[in-house]
Amino acid sequence: MDITSFAWIAWLVLILVFIIIEMLTLDLVFLMIAIGSVGGLVSGFVGTPWWGQLIVAAVLSVLLLFFIRPPLLRALKRGGDPAKSNVAALIGMGGLVVSTVSRTGGLVKLAIGETWTARLATASDGAVVVSPAAELVPGEHVVVVSIEGATAVVTPAPVPSGADGITERSAS
View 1 (cartoon, rainbow, N blue to C red):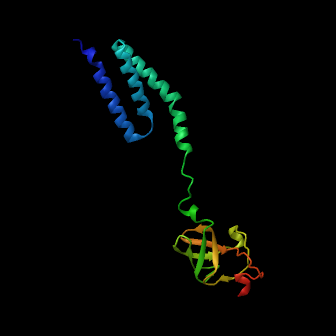
View 2: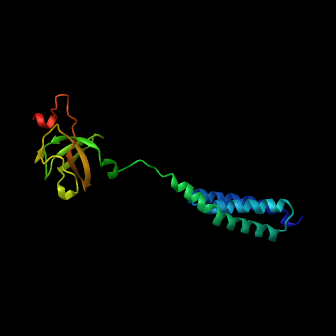
View 3: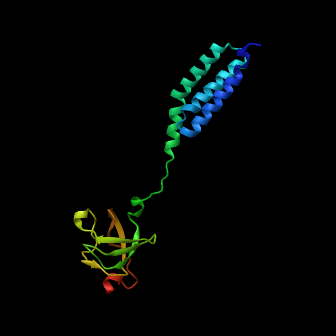
């Protein structure tokens, strides 16, 4: 019994170690090395000497690292989460004026239920100002056009006209 006849045990241990490291890093490098080690294990089963097993494992690992890993990483990163979050999710969201909103301040309750400090958007904010209103009274609908720190910059929400042509803003 030669010690090289138990090389398959060393390959199994290496494969297991590489897979455990891959589970901790999630970078696909150690997965490619583990698959290369499987190649070394298989070559040992067909009778290749130990040095040949090492060459097979090394060559297979390098080929996988350079030719299989990059397309796999691209495929994994392509399916990013399309949902908006944080501040980006607030842009375009509707809300209701809680406390009179002017160019300097006020309060609005957004569609998600949060109450934010707010101010009216001006032309210098880059927003399209639909109505040159100096302030919005409680109960009016608004749309968030941007966020500045902890302040929502809002404009009056476009209100569809009723059958008689009267809108909420023109009635008051």
